[in-house]
Amino acid sequence: MLRRARLLAVLGFLIAGGIGIISSTQTWITVQRADTEQPLLVAGADALALLAPLSLAVLALGAAMSIAGRLLRYVFAVLGGAGAIVLILGTLPILSGAPLAAVAPALTEATGLSGDKALGSIVTALEPTAWVTAALVAWIVLLLASVFVLGTAHRWKSGGRRYEQPGAAHHEHTGPLDPIDSWDELSHGTDPTGPSR
Image 1: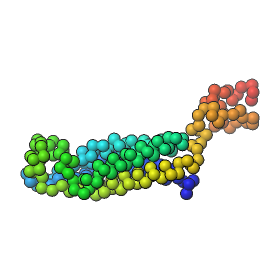
Image 2: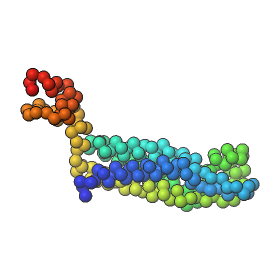
Image 3: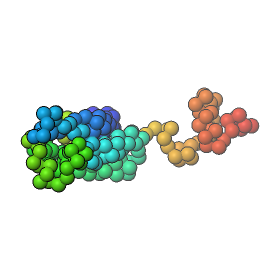
Image 4: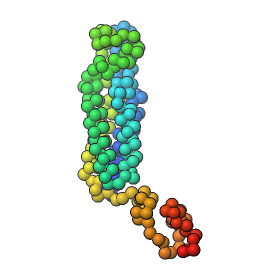
């Protein structure tokens, strides 16, 4: 399983970030209003302001983790875990009973009213949708993936030759070079067609 540890961790981050981005454009809360039979649909990004930016950050962390060295793996895991906790704490109140504050900006834009008393007088029900549950599951996956990275990152294989620092593992070739080795030599500032060949 450790051979696939990096893949599992990266997938955890990417899936969580992807669900977060998708859900930010979907309806999170349906607002039933006393002044009209037409409900107001509040998107995830409106209900939870940090949803889209943190989801994008999680996607970036997942992509970067696929090539990160050992120290950065731990940094990314801590950042991912912190983001997961923030998102869980932001999502739980909406799932357990959407607060008026989560829909206030959208409701003010739709009605022109502001203030808890005025808005509360026209709201008859706040109903969270399945996207809130999906997002919460995604944040739990992200938290588990972050813990998994912290527990296993020291045993992951390195990123491979193409991601190493120039010169860190560079050595002179003594045999014939294939096209990829020739490009690597050029990247290190060595002419593969020079007289030493």
